[in-house]
Image (spheres, rainbow over the protein chains, first blue to last red):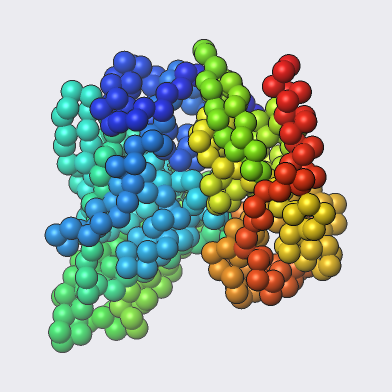
Length: 282
Length: 183
Ligand SMILES: Cc1cc2nc3c(=O)[nH]c(=O)nc-3n(C[C@H](O)[C@H](O)[C@H](O)COP(=O)(O)OP(=O)(O)OC[C@H]3O[C@@H](n4cnc5c(N)ncnc54)[C@H](O)[C@@H]3O)c2cc1C
Ligand code: FES
Ligand code: FES
């Protein structure tokens, strides 16, 4: 399978890249790791007329700690994230994406800009209440929270001509965390994924909790009913099991080849229980 | 749509080629440089038969544009042996019968070398996880896993020899490459 013809540039600066995208119009696309875009182009489901390769923009790579946040360059690859245990749930989740060859190419910025509800890192951004910085060719820059970034299936707040230039993920020191992913085969996409984050109060009860799903709707979504059921109460197995029963409330899982919507709802309940148990350390 | 100049090193030899931006790295290697050891199994980033090293790390070359490899170092299965001496991972696949038809083998070996470079002493579980992006329709994986485990005993299993000018595969690739370039 061979993509349709397109023009190609690999600018050396962010400003040049933004200009190239602006000049290219709405059929110009940024290229990061290419592991979502190229498969679509090979199947001719995407037919961009210009690819603006971001690979020379060294400033968009790297991981730094700043004011309680992880500041991550959008070109940082899943492989870079998985080898940084101090990133906690981000590292743990990155290690579960596809296989090592895919992780050696795919980037966090590409994953968040693409907005595939089956992708794993968007649910982590939702649970940690992270945010991205988006820049446009006019020099404008804005910060978009996870809750506003993911709008619909393959639709994000990143518009034509715009680039994600930074990802910020609160470090949430002292929180327990877990990402549970259920697949049919080792390297597969998630049928369902659950990111759980738990903060214990000094008396052992649940001070705060966040739960977000991969592949349970057309975007990553938070399991607010589960969170409400646990917050402020005990964090024992019985409480967790009871809260996890609310996992499918408000979800609208897409049925696919591997799983019916009902089966995904079942998986969401089971995986939420497991993820919360791990995150609570029980 | 204009061609784009690409300069890359393949198995230690520098190539300068003009390519259509849509040319995939695997097709550059196979069709233009004549390095047919890299296979195309699925063409959908699933099977790993097309695995090569890009700047020292394993990637699926059916999902990399040749233009993305500009300025990079590529190593293919032809670049592993040191002259007539097989690479320790190739040797172990041979000793342990880690292949039947051999179609998956180049990708499997390139992935295994990268695995051992990052994790010189993997457990069986880590080997199986580490090879999850490579499919084999023949062996049932047992002897592949055994081969990687045995290769790990060799001190250079995760290393690639400095490309020798005499390396057979690289030599063959070179001649064909020139033919391809002149065409
Ligand atoms: C076989 C296979 C299995 C996979 N399995 C999983 C999985 O289990 N879980 C998972 O999460 N992912 C999976 N993926 C997807 C993989 O993680 C992708 O690499 C990732 O989703 C996209 O990152 P990329 O850098 O490759 O983006 P690209 O493919 O380069 O780009 C994706 C989209 O984002 C845009 N874009 C890229 N960077 C930016 C930026 N900085 N600013 C604005 N727009 C940008 C592009 O224009 C494009 O529209 C899989 C991919 C493959 C091929
Ligand atoms: S041919 Fe590239 S992964 Fe199968
Ligand atoms: S040996 Fe035949 S596919 Fe692996």
